[in-house]
Image (cartoon, rainbow, N blue to C red):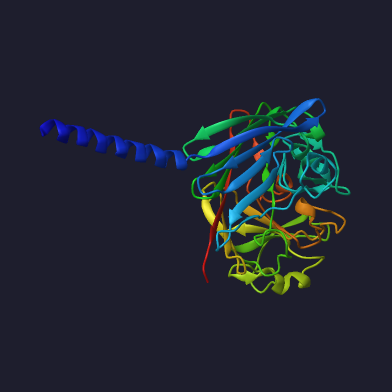
Length: 374
């Protein structure tokens, strides 16, 4: 009888162990790597990352582009909530930075020029007389890539050496970008960089979100940004140097606001504003929330950066055919570009973007997806 009880105990323990192991297996995030094409004799890969909830994020090492994010709605239906294309060739062709990594410097630099001490640096101009988004460097190169796993989950690490003088920027800039998909349906993005010469660095992620699944315009989305101030700009979207209050402005989003309510009142064609976030410098803080009432999806954003550029896809061409044959058009998606302020190198009153040898650039953004029932 004692022997039987011991055997029963072992059987019970073995069942418990199998149950635990089974649970661990279902909680694992899986990463699939496939060849997606070739650019300038460099292999381009598409990585498919799937967590235990069935959420899927697809990333390519071309431009560090997030090509797809599949998340459930309030009824559990999975849909793609970022704009983009089905194939590499469309991403290589000119497009409005769908899903791309932006660097070295996100947003505009006035006259494509800045000074560091006694040296003046002339940058490439790709937006009239100005430099926009680093003159299209990070979003159009093939990054070195590897699958990684950390305390947050599994993901992709991208690496790139931006050499001294590219598009006029000083210093050899070693960049490491890590995308991680967590078990609780959040995309965690960490940007790191080091330089061998004084330079300016300001990177961001340029995904266009549409929580309906990309089938409708974004007007019914509700958004709240924890910001009482914004960066004032002139007609060419160049900062005046003033940090102004949003109070009384039609772009005040300090309380939950339907995007479509004021979008047609904003010159020239919608939201394209850099909000000064109510947060401590370098502290990872939740700064905004988006709700989409029809499908019930939510998106919360946390960042270490001091600002966020809300851009509502005002200039998306109606000639663009996106994923699944969907005809895109203006206001089909919105960007939440966490970043330092535009033209910071030329405004000493703005938070500094200067990076010196021996220092480390390190910024984080988290896109956290969920649902609500109301």
